[in-house]
Length: 165
Image (tube, rainbow, N blue to C red; front, top):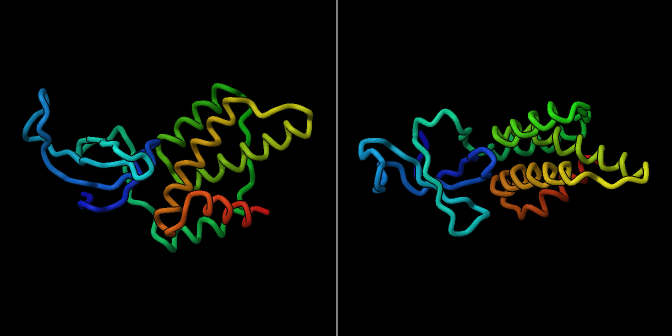
């Protein structure tokens, strides 16, 4: 169980902070069911309620500082992997965003980055779907690393780009 004040990653919602744990006073909601009340760190005014025993949505602690540094140091060793089948790739990217697994997000970002570079070299633009997935993955990953390392998301992006080049 998470504690009040802890930072967690809530699937594709990104980094949230636990504001309270307990029943919520809402019409139609069982009074004996326990909920996390959370706010998204990068979206002011947002409130998310999720049952403590919710197994459908990924909810995990943010990385530790040492795990974050190790992840960034290992990014240069990630080899881009591209799934050619559009539907399979879409399903895979959707799952990665839903689970918000940092290593998978890194792989996704790198794969999409290389795909974009290949398309540009071939005289084409990146597809809107690729761009949407790329930015969603960046938002989740850089948000988590930013909280853990005490940096702006843009600064995290710069650190990652340095380690890749």
